[in-house]
Amino acid sequence: MQHFAEKLKELRLEKKLSQFQLAQAVCLSQSAIKQWELQTRIPNAKAVIDLAKFFNVTADYLLGLEN
Image 1: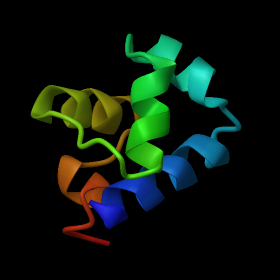
Image 2 (image 1 turned 60 degrees about the horizontal axis):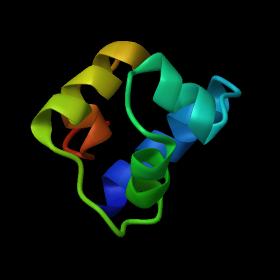
Image 3 (image 1 turned 90 degrees about the vertical axis):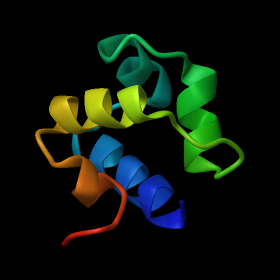
Image 4 (image 1 turned 90 degrees about the horizontal axis):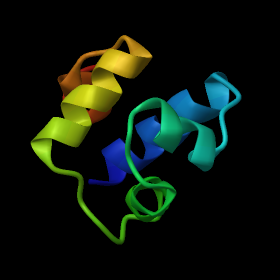
């Protein structure tokens, strides 16, 4: 899940969002965002889809399966 952590942080920073702001925007906890970025927790499918929709990218992109 290294690709996911990198992509998530990259997209979040591009939008100049804190972990807290992103969490609020997608109805998740700041703790979850932090753990995903630190690779201590793996997101479920719904979270990946919600984040992909928010950032207007594909789930495959978030997961590092496409450029």
